Length: 451
Image 1: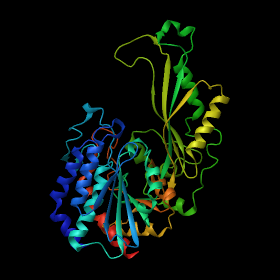
Image 2: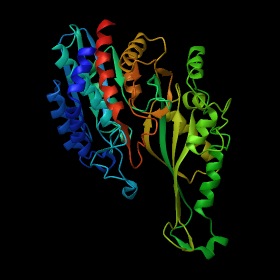
Image 3: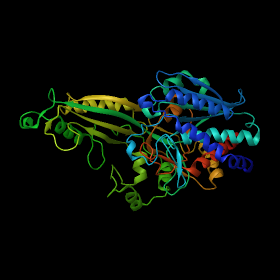
């Protein structure tokens, strides 16, 4: 790796400048802002790095696909990432413009710096560094890259694309760099993500907003919604939907030991999050156990009535709640949705409308899969540190497309810091995290060739 490290050090400014070019291009999938332009820009940057690249159209935003190495190589690694980003609002809370990246106090600030442009681009530059140092990939190994533009809107077209292009995407393992390293700074290897059912509950009780004097006689959709939500989950964190836990996969003894080995200080976790306590859940209040193995239901937003300054005495006509239900293997979003509909009907809430905004299946790769060891060795080589292994995390993503539709193990190797502020103002990537990611990407190529 010394030769590759020398190439990386020699090109530090160039690699940073190229990342900044990518970060300056907005690619907000939820708003259809700049996504296609970003796909073309990414294609050009990949081709400059030595990747043969094509753009595939989908029903909404393009997929950018690339290959490097011998076309007929028997062994292949598929690197996944997403070039779309979250909306930057609220803009007033950014210390610097979201699409004008800058470096402050050892961190790269800008929308997409960590989620996910900075992390996917580390793989592009890792390959570029490997090719410059070694003159080509190891014989018999091909690298494939699939970067989508819809992850931030629940990847509605990725599964269909993968199903239609199984031969193109065929590989021995998938690598995905997202999420963050451990709070202590130790690198991590993550083997699973939760699934998600994202819904909106809509309650309407009267034909239009009215003077609140009528609240003594007419039904309030807000009170009805609040009461409904109390039937979905209690303060202990346990979800009340019938059958919700029936399909939950029991963790193996090895997975439990892996979670128990994650460095963990309960008091520090509560202090860092400004929380007075941790949710008890069904069996424990262990932060990482519940994050990994327990499904939950989160209220992402509630809105109704007057939201402006001062007072307005109004009885709203409608009330809305957005919920993301985080699922674990082997829960299915559609079954959960059907159970919720039946439950609300049985409780007398058959008038409440459920709008589905996204579905993702859960995914987990076994700890004993040999490609997990490949990723661990690569991280160890790049960081000169032993990684922390997570059997799964609380976040959601399209990993199930690789483990399910394509039938390959999927391993996450994140490079961002735990306080990356992704999806929030002042999103950031630790500067050395970006370069550690480039080293890791090159080391994955090295270790994959030996596997």
